[in-house]
Length: 211
Image (cartoon, rainbow, N blue to C red; front, side, top):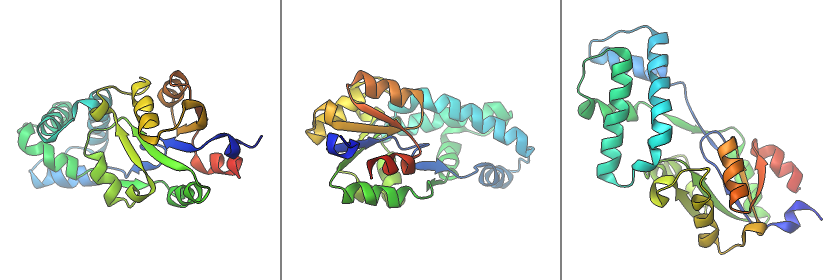
């Protein structure tokens, strides 16, 4: 039986599957120079990678405006400490976040349109703080999704199946009738634990299998 006939909904990871980050180094260098610091680009990249590694395990802690501000401050401190730059993290945090520019993975928008045209309900399932709702709107992806489930709102991160089960509850779809598309082992493990089918990104390849 074709896969399309076996599913009623698709849940999708965001970062790495539908959304990616533009090279942050140029913007971060520009920001630091505005504060009279001019570290080497490689040093800035390493500091960003340290912050990125910190954010992942803590993304679910950004549940509301205050906790997001606190998370941004902590992330900024990791970045500044890695650089050895003496700037106040609470003030630098919003500037740091603003310098991170996300973009849609090439072809992702067309694939989402194609999935919806096949009568499938879509939900995003992501390890991200609650500001991701604004990101999706800014990137033009929000209209494709019936629901958005964040680790911050659930209080658990993938691969915990709780985020997937929340999406299934919102969709009103049994696990065996849903497919999750993601780009890493946490997506695979979490979907499996929730009883869902799993297909690895890129989304274009999955769409071809559904056709």
